[in-house]
Length: 69
Image (tube, rainbow, N blue to C red; front, side, top):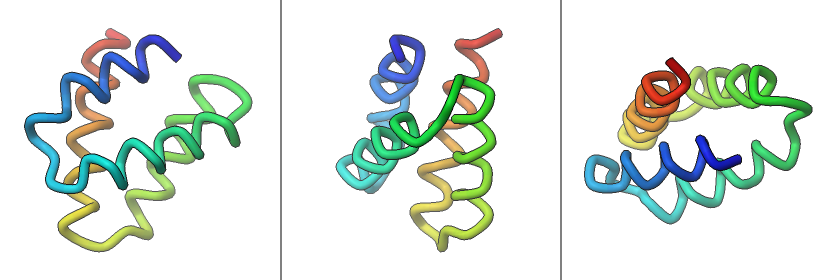
């Protein structure tokens, strides 16, 4: 979860709907079985979301993947 929190922190200046993103990420993390499953759930959410929140999710995913290495 630390990497998820760090990615949230790093994406905060770039996202429009911070509270919505933070809430969704928390829900997806609780629902997921591991990190890879979390990323899959996040990608599914990106596919079904509408702009401009979809962009916020993409920014978060980009930060998350860059931290994961």
